[in-house]
Image (cartoon, rainbow, N blue to C red):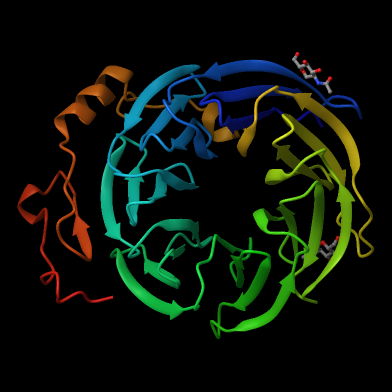
Length: 362
Ligand SMILES: *[C@@H]1O[C@H](CO)[C@@H](O)[C@H](O)[C@H]1NC(C)=O
Ligand SMILES: *[C@@H]1O[C@H](CO)[C@@H](O)[C@H](O)[C@H]1NC(C)=O
């Protein structure tokens, strides 16, 4: 089966690259599809939905790119600090986290900020939405792991993890999650919210990706990518992927195998074929792309069949609509702690103050 696939990479050089991959043969090739230079500082995060690619940067903005129209789609100006993490939930919502400690929930329909959560004292370093869409986890530089009820935007659970974690990820089934602190991966079970195992990587970890519910690809400050079995809590396979440190890993399933994607400081994006069999063997290189940029982050874009269905006019916000929407919307100053419900359709309820500065309920 021929998969329609595009790889999106962000770079230190402020540019986002899009490559269309030809998956017809056993040797995959890629062709530059677009470059997007909308940021004024290095790109720190990228995510893709069926329709949009979003990038976050040290310039404090989130830039939108419409993959269907192949055009810029405006910017989201809400964070006051570097954007550190971006994650879509389906195609309807985007979550963003930043060095301002905020976690924002955006509706992708009109790109409105629906909720602003003051998530961490310090930076938000990573976030992950549960497959049910009801919960999100976040970690930050206040040495906590927090669970958010996305239905009401409230804090559901706080765990003091004694160290600053850099990454948090749910497994695809949502029955466990991993928390990365430097070179260490703590594996948690959802039911008990307790650590069931810890795996130490030889180097500081930069990126992880669940390939299926029990194995996790781990990249770090060296050229080797390792595969961690989170059930057995051990590293089960490793291979040299790049010439220098690997900055990002992603994956997707194609037919009956997994394609692991790696992006490195060496400028390359590589595509690896890996069969998720009982006995895990090192992957086979399918293809590589010399981007000539120092890559920082990576995402896969795939159109869905749903995208081919013509959309109603109410769904298609034009760039002008969005610009209007964004200029109309004022940058909300976060003077209060806790949750601010910012539903523009109900202006009366906006900015509900929950306690003063000393009455922080965390
Ligand atoms: C995930 O992949 C591992 C390693 O290839 C395999 O042993 C395991 O059975 C797979 N798990 C599932 C749930 O498919
Ligand atoms: C990657 O591309 C750049 C620019 O075209 C080139 O200078 C460099 O040699 C290439 N790298 C390799 C390993 O071919």
